[in-house]
Length: 169
Image (cartoon, rainbow, N blue to C red; front, top):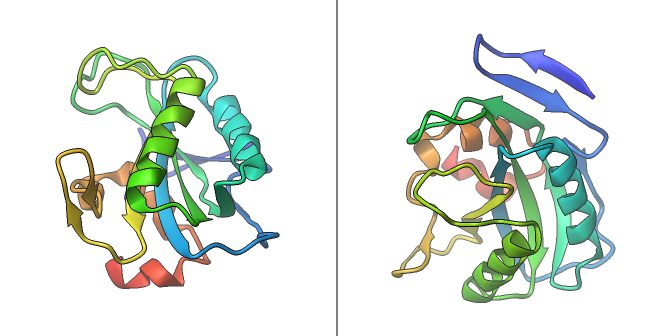
């Protein structure tokens, strides 16, 4: 693991899996960008376990991961720093099916929802799903606050293979 300080409170963490570009063994119809994060216990290790879990999944194919950004919390600030990354996946699931899938994955990795911006083991947000624009009660695409979050923007800018998203940057 290697750490690169970006400022006094931001740093990139590099591991063997973050960042990584993968030539998927199977191709799916849809592209999605997921935001990953957490701040309870060993989040870097948990993100690596998540990578292997997704690699084994028949529902998604991992295409690329970003470096992991260590950054201070926002909202509720009396908690440990967060570790965030973004991951480009492909899937045949619809956006709503993918949302249900990632909610199940969060739960499998110990996610408990206690209050807004609370500490968490794993948070998975759907940032983009193809070029779909959606505004439903349980899912808004693109993610409504992605442009204002260093935890999404900085890792995303480090990714090489997201040409389908370049128009958003």
